[in-house]
Image (tube, rainbow, N blue to C red; front, side):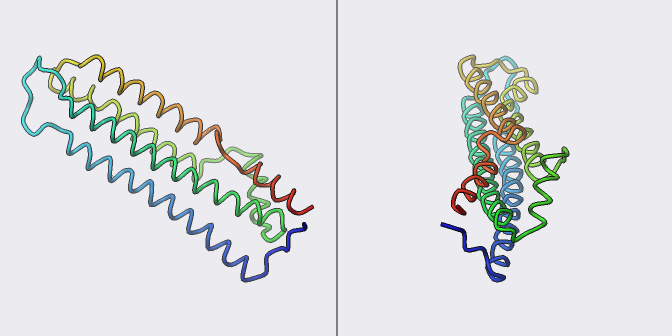
Length: 188
């Protein structure tokens, strides 16, 4: 089945969809920063704990929950990027957008810092800070760690950082090449 190729209205719709996805990804990043600030403010002890006490369990659980929610937001942003790449691959394969063709070649040939990478940097920083927050509380008030909970936070933080780095900088689970192949297959 050969692709029918988009008409002018289709092109406008698809370009608007791409713009909307880019905006949604920005909104998700802004939401993550806002959520991080609110959660950290909530996790800071109201009264100064006595030195030598342990870091409260709620601090560990709050940090783990925050890290989990941040990762969920990053995965959603990643899926939006995949959706966007499926649309832009269609525009490339049908010859409906010279810009998308040129932009794909540029991205493959030259390193650039745009869209996904800055977003990954923000999510990396937020995730590392959220999973390390019990350590910050411990150092700020000379509190003792709960070794099991501290280990869980450390493991979650390392897993988070590895996945965000891989998805944001190494294109783990990305689909642009696959999307192009699938559109080509449909065009036969």
